[in-house]
Amino acid sequence: MKIRAKVYLGFGIVVAMVFGIAYMGRHSINEIVFDFKNFDQDATRTLQLSQLDGLAEELNGNVQMYIFTGYDGMVQKARFLEKEIDSRINALLSRETDEESLGYLSKMKEHLGTYMENFESAIVERRLRSEYVDKRLVDDFAILSGMLQTFADQDVSDVATGEAFRKLYQMRRAAADYFKYLDTSLVNEAKERVLEVKQAMANMPGGSAFATEVAIGTFVESLDTYEADFLRAVQATRAYLFLVNVVMAGQSSEFSYNVEALKVRGFESLHELRNKTFAAADDRRKIVLWLTLVAAMGALVASVLVARSTVGPITSITDVLRRLASGDKKASFDASARNDEIGTMAEAAEVFRKKNLETEGLLEESERMRGELDAKTGQLERANEEMESFVYTVSHDLKSPIVTSQGFIGMMRELKEMGEPDEAFAKLGQLEKANARMVELIHHLLDLSRVGKVDVEVEEVELSPLVDEIVESYEQKIAEEGFEVRVQPNLPAVSMNRVRLSQVIDNLIGNALKYGHSLNGNPNVIEIEAKETGDAVELYVRDLGIGVDPAYHEKVFGLFNRLDVSKPGSGVGLSIVRKTMRSFGGDVWLDSALGKGATFRLSFARVPTLAYEI
Image (cartoon, rainbow, N blue to C red; front, side, top):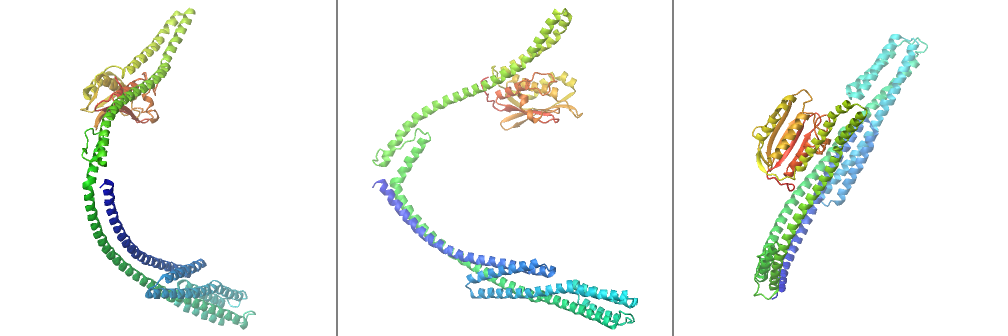
């Protein structure tokens, strides 16, 4: 049988088993989804009931706020909440099928309606109370006090009128205090004050033209009107308080009770559904597991039968091809006895192996040539960059002493022609300084040009004795400038050319002696420290001098860059330091800020990798 037929047969058996398992799995998942939908419906209903309870609490809060403040906006909000709660109850009723739950929902709807009916009655009584307290009683009192004031103006009786005034104001204060504190004793007190006012009016003499019995009778009638309005306001107050604190509170409690009962039923239903779903899922899991085991055994048997005749050899030839693809030149597969597709693949693998040998040789040669080309290209690019920078800076900085020399020579010639040879000879000193400056620049440029161009020997150099030697060479300069040099004991060794390393450290110490004077009266200190960091050694040369603005941290390593031209120097030293460090695979950085000193950090590679041929 051909390999294709064997593979198709085995694949067909496995596919049939997979479809059987998929069918059972789909059936099980559909049942689980059905149970989950029921669970989700109960959970949603329970959540909606919790939201209803919250809305009911909010409704009750708005009602209490209205009763307390009389603000009509709370009435509108309470009515809106009642409609929202009623709408949600209707929605639950339309979806509910359980008889007991329907009963609870119907009771909730009934209690909500009763609650709002009583609230509307409370609104009427609350507004009636406001009408009496805020307007009628005020108007009644104004009438009474006006009449008493008229009696007083007619000189009826100062004593009787004053007593009536006093009792009248006590009556108003008792009435006002009742509506403020809702103390029943204040109602009785107000009624007693009414009687006392009437008694005071009865004791008033009637001899005056105005204080007739008719006038006093009119006053008493107005007083009776005030008392009647006051008692009606008391009745309205007690009515709406009774409705809110007793009737409506009871309806609210019954509403909450029914909500809680429905929530309990919902939680019980959720628990029951949960247990049912877990039990059903466990049963289906066992069925699918057994079916999977049977299918796996069948697939295993089919796979073994197919593998014996096809998969094994195919795997072997595939491994050979993979090894050949990874560059293994010895990988091979003996299929000389086979005349099927595997034999053909074996022949192709052998051709591939031979071609692999040829390709590997070509790749090695190509990589070698490309490496040489990259190295040469890098060297050429660096050389071009350095040449461009060098030509620019040299043409710029060497021009200055030459121009100076030419100027002094011209002046000397003119002085001589003017018959003043002594003045001409006096200019020789300045001419010598300009020439000396040019010679110094040339020497430093020669030092810079030798970095990376002269054959040197890389060796392991102990830093401690080398640094001590350089510091000792600056001993007189250190004393003259008032510096203290602190060197860390037992500095580590680095791999570099000793002469070049000495030149680097010498430049940095000389630079610190120029610019490292402390600005705040502290001692002038130069610190030299080192530490080992994995694959490198770092050396630090630190001073407490004027420091360098971060904007110039890179510029100080350029040719002829001097931030303080008042200090002696050529502006080439730090360029030599950086170029030397990089030529040995290291580098140098400046960490500084104005007024906070400067730290030069040098990094030495454990194994120097020369940037280019030296």
